[in-house]
Image (cartoon, rainbow, N blue to C red):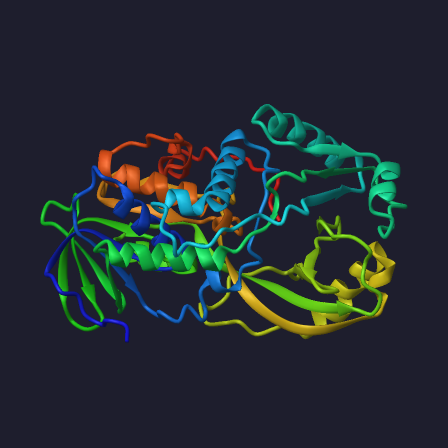
Amino acid sequence: MNAKRPTQQSYDVIIIGGAIMGASTAWFLSDNDDFDGSVLVVERDMSFASASTSHTNSCMRQQFSTELNVKISQFAADFVKNMRSYMGEDDRIPDLKIQSFGYMYLADNEDFARVLRENQKVQVSAGAATQLMTPEQIQAAYPFYNVDDILLGSINLVDEGYWDGATVNDWWRRQSRERGVEWIENEVIAINRNAADTQVESVTLASGEVIACGQVVNASGPRAARTAQMAGIDVPVEPRKRYTWVFKAEQPLDRELPLTIDPAGVHVREHGGGTYQCGGHSDVDPAVGFEDHTMDHALWESHIWPTLATRIPQFEAIKVQSEWAGHYSMNTFDHNAIMGPHTALSNFIFLNGFSGHGLQQSPAMGRGTAEWLTYGEYRSLDLTPFSYKRIEDNRPIIEKAVI
């Protein structure tokens, strides 16, 4: 039975949202010997039925166009592969690994081929194992692809592929609770400023309590803008619908399928046992309601399946086994994270706008947020480029590798 009400009237840190980002932050705070404060996580639905975390494809990649994003994923890979060590050698913690089938970016025009070449230089400089492949090399390694229109491919087979994000998330929640972090199933309905209008003073819960706080973290995923608006802040994050299908092939491929990003905007990957997982979205991509998870069945027939069958002819004969729609927490400003304190309301901390790569970034982002809450600075990776100030200053971070 999930607790509904807090046990205290005041907390040093209140985290709004208990999915992957909130759980990571809570755990890293609990793991930091220099932090001795009280933490309350407020999650509106502990089943996480509609959370982005529950609808993720649970993959990670190092193929980004900025060094910082590469390093963020490298820490995620290290955390996943050494989770038991990170979590205090707890014998209950399972040994996890990354199923490194890699991401295969395919370029069908010279402009995108140039982007892949530029990105590969950044990635290799940061320590990634990204390789560029000619169409002939792609065909030799993965003969099931149709590469008639392809100019260049890019793939990394080291620490890039599927990982068990759900297990990591579950253990972050479980161990943080055991260490004293308080979790409640409730909802923040108001964020209250002090008389000077310079700090968040308290939050009001749906159950009626007004809870004082030292710092508050907005980790509310697609609801980030609504949470920020309670504090009188605008943040450019909105829910965008992304569709996923799992299908079985009549003729399974004879080797693992990399997570393939087709130029037509469809991605597909190995799922296991002759099944595959693919995703995409419609050309019209508006913000949607928080509870809108309705499937677009016409999209499968008109775009997804034809693209799959064209790129991988063996996928002409396939049968859908399951399907769902989830939400990206889309940062419409530049598709990158928004982190750290607000410029004027300094104890309001952003952890928002991950635009589809939040799960793989959660270890580094939770660690960084916990560092900021403890020390007032980042100590592992310098995450200040993701500050809210860049939005005020109109200085976008250009990330060219967004799926």
